Image (cartoon, rainbow, N blue to C red; front, side, top):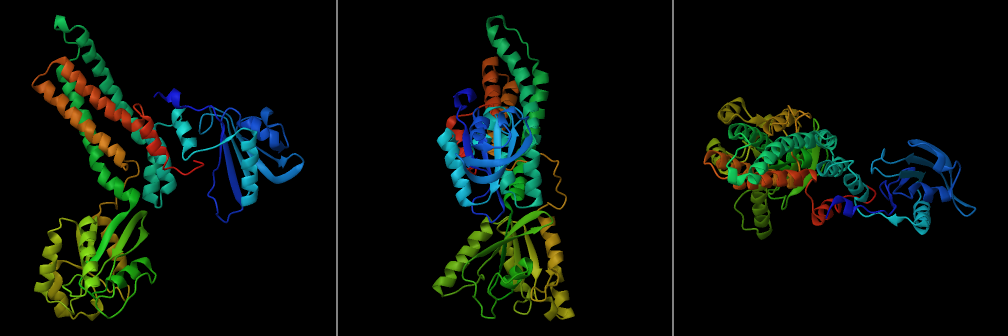
Length: 459
């Protein structure tokens, strides 16, 4: 279905602020052809139909002569609004009764309750945002760190879209020449220079590959870095978690095997979110419950982006520590070797373990914690994160890029071997199709439903 076929003429309404929050003000939003008229019928103050766009007006919302609330009404006339339609925002006192009453009155006048994400869907359908920008709106709302906020802002402002748009335009220009050759198939003419086409495809291929590779880092910045704290029982894992979080999140005990299941929490380090997972101590055990915890620890380690592996040199000799490190290395996941209880080490013991090049900390005394935080940033290569870099954070986008990459491989193969223009055109069309899926040049109703149903109502 075309975008035009999806555009609704209804005037929609929803609470735009979070319900149930103990704030002073709530905002009710309307969008559509009748937005100004409907509110004007309830508003006692200036005639809203005669007011300029981007103005705010004080008055009362009334049901007949009964005053419901004193409000501020903001007017945004299309196309100079978020949805590109007439938009009204009513700022009321944050009373559940007031909010529900005003929404009910406006629905009775002819408005319709908005569906999840419908305001942003209209912005997309009306050309205010492309699809990747619309998805960035949801990412911006969900951002909980400086890094995830910066990436979402960059994408919402069109950084990712503009790069894809340029790639697509370059490819379309050559695709049109290939298509022209098909019209003159019997005359064996060549309008698209194959050498120039190869240079262009290699350039686009390289950019697409870079974008695909950026997903690992982008996904980490968006969702947080999963870091498993692992080691034998009673080496100080829970104490370290508490030290990192600066609160008593995990139970600490001298009894080995206290932690039977994983405990998760997150902190922000220089704008990057790290999700720490405290795990059951790894050891052979006959305790059924503890054994389940140990297996869960191993599973979490396999899924981690980074592992902090703790050792207690008062328990283990160097050979035992090296054996444990080998097991962690087999997972092929970056890890940091930590020697805990530094305050209990003699100079001789410290010299013995120096071959491991560990970080020395005392989780109990909270020494070495800042150095550990710096090392965490270094390990995930985010210390020099540049918010201007175009970075992929959405699984839908990276899957479409991979399919584009595959189609471009076929184009390059066809140029080198060579194949006929019709096969070349088919592969170029596939690449254009998959690029178009990212920005919304190519859409289906199911795709739009899947994306916008995840938005909050009111956005």
